[in-house]
Image 1 (cartoon, helix red, strand yellow):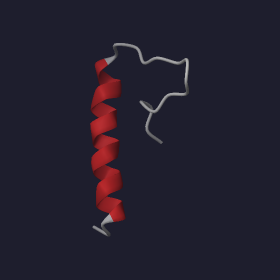
Image 2 (cartoon, helix red, strand yellow):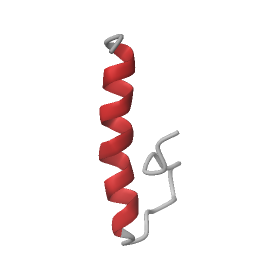
Image 3 (cartoon, one colour):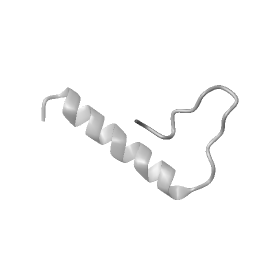
Image 4 (cartoon, one colour):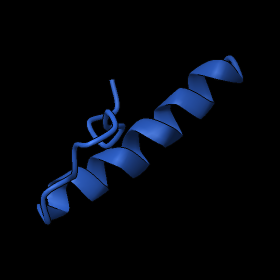
Amino acid sequence: MDPTVMAEGMALSDDPILHFRHSTYTDSYNRRSAGQ
């Protein structure tokens, strides 16, 4: 689950952890998808 994917009408806060988690989850997803 990527906490930065929001439904229409919703917005992220300025919490820097959310931005860090987005990049971490993206990297993890890409590695799992590649079978690593």
